[in-house]
Image 1 (cartoon, helix red, strand yellow):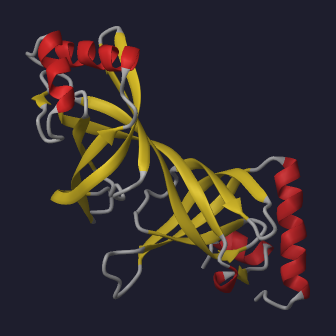
Image 2 (cartoon, rainbow, N blue to C red; image 1 turned 180 degrees about the vertical axis):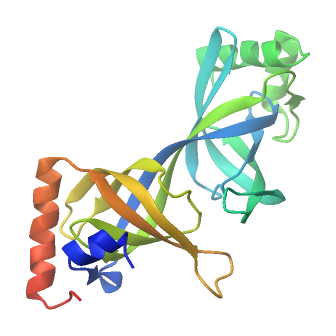
Length: 239
């Protein structure tokens, strides 16, 4: 199984595990802000955030919005929720340390904190030099958007789609901008549709085999993929 039955009939599949082909999936995820300071923020999110990874957090309050990059410094499971297929989805709490906050950006963030909490502008600035866990609880709307780029390993590949292995589950029919880094430095960009998602047995932490359909791919990238598939076919790796 790579994507769908139609793909099985139309396109030959190739196992590419030994080639070490990797890619990225780009998406925006809605998160809940638990508390915030000039130095960082703690979040509630339904997807694991890897420690050391950098993400962009976009926050808004009324007519004011701010976008800040930050690094995840801690992450833990804080609860669960039921998914659309009655599966159990873990809920995570995570801490993000803002990157290179200074000057106008620090002032804008302090004013943002002033609006979403009961603090004053001066109090928000004063916390910038304190410990990372000294934050203000957020009042009112706590929603924000986290721009994410998650990596994956390609297990099987065809002209119509691929099978990847990911640390995170995805909902069938979701679509994301994605990319594959082929050997030789070639990169293929496309929109991928989640065609299937199954948890891998006996994996701890949990891993998922995810079938991706190539829903939209530029012609130049499709030509590069065809050339690569042709080379795999010559080597007799298809089945």
